[in-house]
Length: 233
Image (cartoon, rainbow, N blue to C red; front, side, top):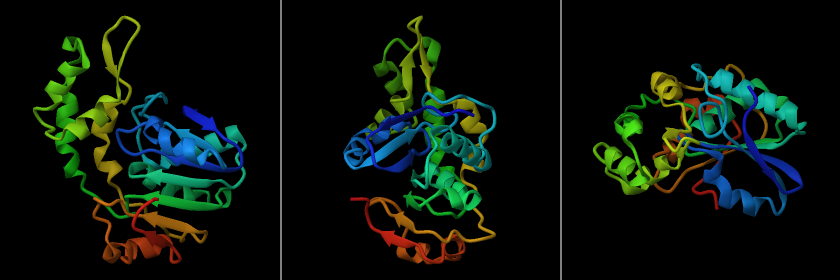
């Protein structure tokens, strides 16, 4: 699958993978800053943003999607940075194709299993948006608010809403596929062989990846030499 991407800057390559329900646009500000010293490639993963939709959504397939992008762009040993779901894609890629990377950076996610129950309200809110009835973003926001109380979360999700040429609204994300594969999004990234190149795991200020978890077996099986930082900046 040929993924949609945005490239800027020159220098050592840095590839950015967004999180669940996100797009490459989420990284616009940081990508622009990093492009002062790097060749930055921000990517829309399958079923997100402007990349193709498909009924299949697994980490194995997303890893292969990224490999195809590396071939397409002739990338030579880039740094791969992934956030949340994109972090698990990055981990899967690092295990599948370690020779293609210089280093790995993972934000706000562990290799371990998650039951994804914390996404139930998000999915309910997205499905509550009756697209044929939506005339403006405010209406979509009000529909989501029945299930999603946090305004910041709704505004983040509404970045996926766009107008078609006939002026009707649609989601850029593939909501049906993501809903049916949500259990897989929480799957553990298993590492029969560890990733032995530099790996940095970064905890968000409001996330629950603790030092206790970073020292858990799932992390150590993934990389025995990883480092932990409390924030990206």
